[in-house]
Image (cartoon, rainbow, N blue to C red; front, side, top):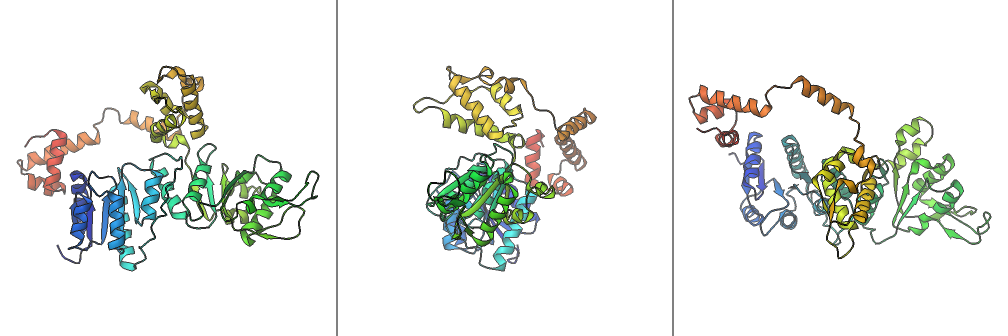
Length: 460
């Protein structure tokens, strides 16, 4: 191939993945090479100069993807690296982004997304050398966030990207989804992780108490103020303040919070002297602040100040594929030390997977903790679950009802896989079994013809 074509280096210990990606990128007009270990990839880079590296994270070789990334960042700082993994977690996402990965893709991936990511990496690589990013701090976060759902992986990447900044962050989502965990993850992965993290629930205190809690007060400012008190913005110093349920604040308090964000200063209740503050602000809400602005309940100027970066946490019912992971995590967390972890029966897990979870992850944690406490057999059965989980089934959404209607409409029709099988047989029959000609007609390689034939049990 021409030397001018963009050069892509694929690194994965799975040969099928390598061949598939090579075929896809070659069709896109790229010069593609693959290796099945990190060591082999580094050896190739001494003689070749790939424009982009696409590497798996977990490989059964001496160098895994993150170690390869570290070598590439030090030896070839202008070469962007895109990492892939089937084992997504916040720790790997943060390490990948902070160690300088251009992007982080979860398996199974959509080919269009992979191609788009590589094209963006090529633009970045050719435009400037700014792809060189600083390495991560040598600490590792234990966040409590669990999930490999694509939306959760996107949140992990967002946490990694914003943790070093000081811009305000607004975390939105239903109650129990883990908004405070995300705020703590942002703080814990930033340069101020050693500074205080101070959270206040704005909906749990009366307005006068909340005002004193946030801004502090001076002695004698109100009945019971027997001394000066520092507010949480002062207590946090250069750390992070989490304003949980920010939607529950009054109009007057919203004005004072706006001043904190604009002027970076607070005035204690009853005081006359403003105090400079340096804390980063993260706000959280289980209500739609934009809608509250339309209703005149929440100040739009404050909303704009808080919503510099928005992270929306999906409800548990929208990421049911994470429920088994969460159950395993919660079993480990709540099993007493020295005792073996309980086993969840399949029928129990099926009930957990189909329940609506209006209380989200917090409700799931309560259910698992209750089951561990009451169970003595070591096997968690449906009888160990609350009645609401055993009996109540989530109402079908409009989309689910539409899917049922479509299923009824197309009942008895062949599946897409069956159509593919029939089409392959038809083309092979028409070409007299000529595999090269069949591949040309279908628009795939001979190697793919062999793979399809093996999948469908077709013998040549």
